[in-house]
Amino acid sequence: MRINVTRSSMPPFEEYVEAIRPLWDSVWLTNMGVNHEKLAGELCSYLGVPNVSLFVNGHMALEMTLQAMDLEGEVITTPFTFASTTHAIVRNGLKPVFCDIDPEDFTIDVSKIEGLITKDTCAILPVHVYGCLCDVEAIEKIAKDHGLKVIYDAAHAFGTEYKGTGVGNFGDASMFSFHATKVYHTIEGGAVTTADTGLMERLWKLKDFGIRDEEVVDGIGANAKMNEFCAVMGLCNLKYVDSEIEKRRTVFERYREGLSGIDGLKLLCPQKDVKPNYAYFPVVVEEEIFGADRQSVIDSLRDEDIFVRKYFYPLTNDMDCYRGRFDSSNTPVACHIADRVITLPMSATLATDDVDRICGIIKSCRGGRS
Ligand SMILES: *Cc1c(COP(=O)(O)O)cnc(C)c1O
Image 1 (cartoon, rainbow, N blue to C red):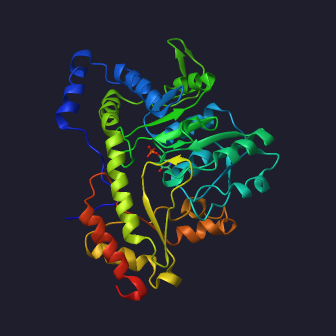
Image 2: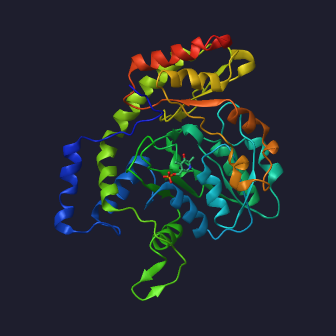
Image 3: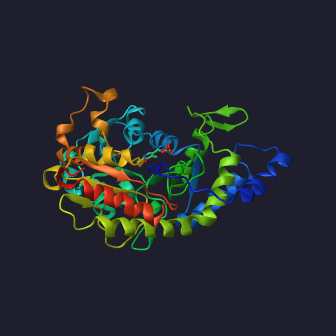
């Protein structure tokens, strides 16, 4: 049977059906309905944050947060991420300035941030990539010293904590994605967490066309509201997310057992003081040492109906839409990783036998023996 890189978690069918039944009576399908409000409240407690603003997806949550902050100039970010992060900056008329990444956890290399700050820098937009947390303490200090806003792309980091504090508490705001492929999902959806109640109010308005009240439209907003069917999916999935993460841990540890200690395969190391969510299992294939390149590993797996992803490749500063505007040679570590990384199938339902089979196939590629 085909194994994909991910598989969405599904609540029991009857539970979802029962939960949407009241919508046939109320006929309140969107525009901040009861389920929307209930989900926002439950997510505040789950994530341990003061406020949650729900969105139609993670991208719009990020784009509108940048808009709501009224930023101008340059935003320091990383290219080793999903297209969304960079697009959100550019679509706000801001200029992304790419910082290189740490070779171990692939998050922004904090030692290289200050060298990129200019008089035009207004914010830092780091990514908790694969659910690995950025060095939030160092970033906070840099931001404070230079008067910069910090917006985290926490799309991968649902449920993670640093020293017991929910990840959504760091920086001025954090964006979460609740896309079907993420650890926790609402089919499509996203959220912003922030302690700033003024920002919460601006987001509330912007995601509803900038409408203040029936007669006043005083923001150039768009439509980015989460509907009731998605909110209900979120309420159902939230009940199971802890057990889903626990199942992911089993898969993650099985992979680590199967693939650690192999020359030329670099795996993620557990981060100190971090409660992880086991969102992804990336492997960096150092072909010179492993004796086979990334593509041959991908092809060998595909021959067995196992589909992995080059996640993240290409770097955003190498994407066709940005050709000629950015230079990826300024981020050599990100280039090195993007050219060699694969993310292996990862989901709560992936069987131990399948993990073993995947590890076996990868190992059989060693030294060109594929
Ligand atoms: C998924 C993702 C997004 C966008 O979220 P959507 O909910 O799909 O719009 C942004 N950044 C990263 C790193 C992501 O993985």
